[in-house]
Image 1 (cartoon, rainbow, N blue to C red):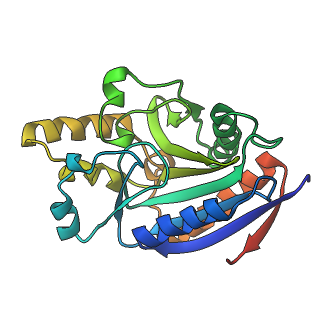
Image 2 (cartoon, rainbow, N blue to C red; image 1 turned 180 degrees about the vertical axis):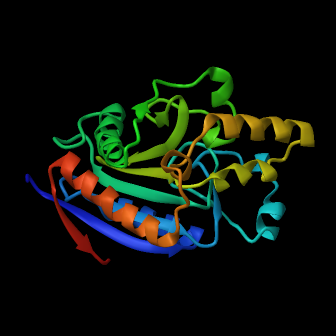
Image 3 (cartoon, one colour; image 1 turned 90 degrees about the horizontal axis):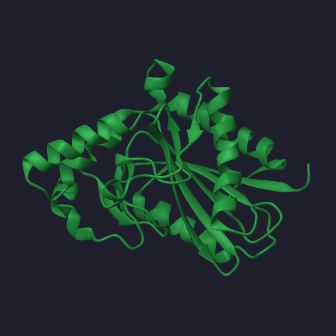
Length: 246
């Protein structure tokens, strides 16, 4: 072991609290600090927009009426409905010896941990080399797998986005546990036909842990999977895991 991995297990929280917590961790982190892995969920479900994404693509009043939160992430990418998933946040140093010198290096280092976690579940996943220009214009993150994102037989399972600041970075990732993320299309500001088309493409382009494992995942299952995710990160990064409360 060449250092420590600080692991934060925060359970479920509201959207604004989750994003404020990750933002605070990013701003407090200094180059050379021990990396942080935060694992959490969302209560209530939350629609997050990417850092630079236009909010006008979504019917915000409908999101609120459904009882969901609507917040903006400090990381890039496109909209996600966080409902039944494991969410991770990694805060680390880049450039540096652990996560490399570039965005690509950091993504691929973290992907090694994610692939190790999925392999432990018996899921054979790979890393996407990118998406078409047309798909990249969609406001919906999980419609297709962008570069560095994780797929199973061509269908996206893990979506990630990154923010880099003063020699440190924050990477968010959503590991889909069930199909609820597909309800995102219900809140697109589109006519019914276009919305239905987006829904079909989202269903065809994504998969989730329940589908891959062939069983329903209850809250206790997600808690156990969070433990396995933390272990996979520590092993892949060759770091000593330390559980912390901040």
